[in-house]
Length: 427
Image 1: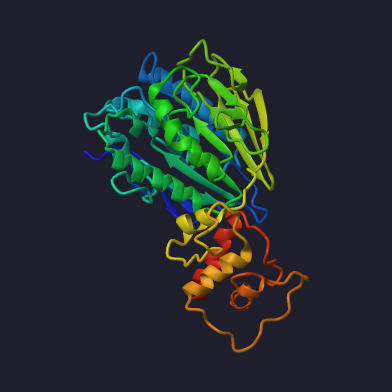
Image 2: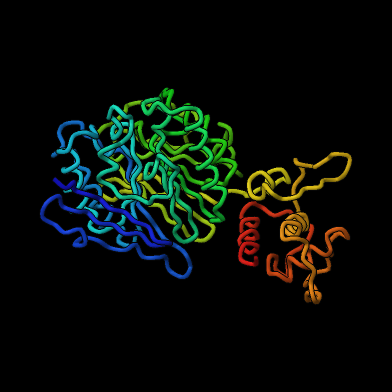
């Protein structure tokens, strides 16, 4: 018997959703393409936390369906929905999946839907969310061996990464090498994006509001990556309260460059307590959804109950982007680059890299080409260092750096990625 499927496909900035009936409805009948944002790039999306089953599938999914219908009806412009795992109570129970799909179909219609899996989807002997992976077709750009458990996509000025945090539970019996490969994929996925907004979705909280050893492992592995590569918003679930933490760096409030974690809860299971030490707002005993809106330099997140009452409002700004060091540039983006250093064996790996140093590394990698004619004069008075003059002229003439670029500027990660894309196009 063919499984009912919730299909989410990506093609560039487009995604495809289909809620497919197991027997009667053809796959294309309920499909729809996600629409790109308007010219100004502003867009909104919905977030639903855990659903699960506390009484019975019919009751709990009907209650969630009412919440989802309210969210979709009140926010018809939402581009897509994210969901933070623990969709069902038992991932091996087909009846629960059927109840979910029935209510998702009737409440969200053809809204594109991007979930992550939680521990309740993963209760197979393998530790993998086997039935979840059969029922959802998701972007297949994750690490080898974990396709669709990890994936990411871009939408307008945002990059969204979806991660399976349950890999840290030990149930998949992963080796240190497996976990290292996953960490490298997460780091590379975030590092390679020059999006203004980086948003991560994962079931387990990175900073738990109840003691949780598996969440602690996720924090040890991923919190430094999220902080380093510019994640602004982390959406999580698992612990059945609404909790918005202060923006954090290394577990300490940091209102300039911290990562904000928001825990959602959309089902009928509620915890009556939580550690509020790092929280700016905690809400108990209410099933709710979040509406996030990206608009220029602002990201707002509103929390609503089923009646449309606003329970919480938060405004976030893009993470401050720090300049890269020479060592980071070589290690992360240009491992074959020839870094000669300052002499006497000093490579200056901890020094911030400059535009002219990047130009020189790329120039050497291209074989030190010579120009037939000099480039047009720069639009500013800053000139490159003597040792970088030929490389800088080549980089500007090749379009790798714009004429307004300053040789001694220290670029942040997004600017470096833009430069490397221009370099790739020039060769």
